[in-house]
Image (cartoon, rainbow, N blue to C red; front, side, top):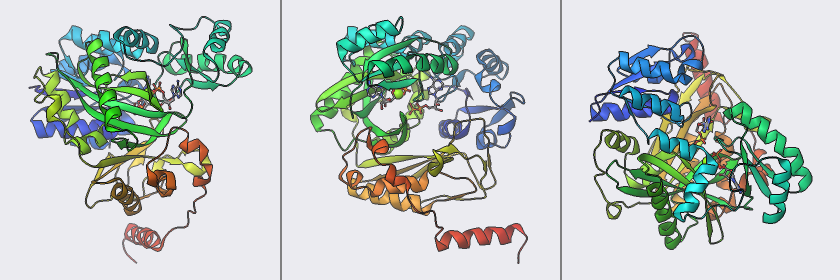
Amino acid sequence: MLKKLLIANRGEIALRIVRACAEMGVRSVAIYTEPDRYGLHVKRADEAYSLGEDPLSGYLDPQRIVNLALETGCDSIHPGYGFLSENAEFARLCEQAGIIFVGPKSTVIDRMGDKTAARDSMRAAGVPITPGSEGNLKDVEEAIKLAEEIGYPVMIKATSGGGGRGIRRCDSEDELRQQYPRVISEATKAFGSADVFMEKCIVNPKHIEVQVLADSHGNVVHLYERDCSIQRRNQKLIEIAPSPQLTPEQRDYVGNLAVKAAEAVGYENAGTVEFLFTGNEVYFMEMNTRVQVEHTITEQITGVDIVREQLRIASGLALSYSQQDISYRGFALQFRVNAEDPKNDFLPSFGRISHYYAPGGPGVRVDTAIYTGYDIPPYFDSMCLKLVVWALTWEEVIARGKRALEDMRLQGVKTTAHYYEQILNHPDMVKGEFNTSFVPSHPELLQYSEKKNPKEVALALAAAIAAHGGL
Ligand code: ADP
Ligand code: ADP
Ligand code: MG
């Protein structure tokens, strides 16, 4: 087993990994930049090291992090998600330094991080891909020619894209001419590469992704799927496991496709294969070569601790179960509670959390690194808490989700929590029938009232009185 793990991340995912280490007897090492000095991942890790004043550069400096791991006697590094998690150079530096990178080989990250190379691998392996360009596009004229062949609407996508950015839908040649340079400029800025490619736009698809685990002995299993169709601007808001919209046959089919995809590229560790579903058609979209934000819901339905498995696999152990050993029960939902103002175009809302009261009760899990008095720094992602609920049936999980969102008190910043209650109240959600157009087709769900309920007012008053040392 690993002995000492450096966690090259921050916030809730760093804390999630610290927790796995604590349960497994692995010593954990946190890194932080100045704005995170009072971060929970720093407080809860066994050791913590500052990487300077600058909010971001410390988290994004592969060589410095590998050097720190060597200096502090770590045998391994977990990259979390975001930051350097899909940076092949980082994995390569670890390999060269003899540090175990908790993830796949650098060559596999390279291949799957390049969306056109990933499409090539899938085509070769017989996994269906979205119709589109065979590699990157040369120029807008080539794009127009291809769009005429495959038919509008099409998507122009950044080849090294991620996080929902660098993707534009084009419904006509005019739009394509307009959007093409925009994607290139967005891709250059966000991902340091101007490469773009084209996919047929699948209209109103479901986003279905499959969690896989693969060990270094050639064993690959899947942990069923997640339905991440509730998205805004290609970014996930609410995730669901399993999808209430798949038949058992579709579930088996897509699970086996994901295993086939992972096997085809010699995948190791935890990964996610993302697909688009429309009717009975399934298309491979991309593979994320890391732990995902929404791994939690898969843990709730299968009982498998995915981060624990990541550490076991990284230390060379074989998977302790076969596909037949893995089953799921009930439904889980995850709400990405973002510090954003839904009523103001989801503008980030950073600042001090004046009051936080965690939801609880049966079937409720919270993954967060916030606390009352915590300042949400403006330099990072706006996701500040993941609320996960589990229940035996769809009806119960919707009710439990609403109840847990109501339970939670998070004041001082605007969040997306109330908006999610509106989504759960919608008849299509109650029926369990939705696709990626749900959020854009329901702007009326943003019209909720923000009037404070009496409980909230009383809590705020009590907090104010306490802050002044009594009445
Ligand atoms: P998931 O795929 O786990 O659902 P997201 O796509 O939302 O997660 O990404 C998780 C985090 O990683 C977000 O903070 C996102 O902005 C960031 N991220 C994802 N891919 C990239 C990338 N290629 N480059 C930079 N940041 C990324
Ligand atoms: P990222 O790397 O940013 O996660 P993805 O390729 O996974 O990018 O796409 C993100 C989202 O964009 C998908 O979940 C889906 O909603 C939408 N999308 C991407 N490609 C297509 C497509 N060809 N047709 C329709 N929607 C798409
Ligand atoms: Mg994706």
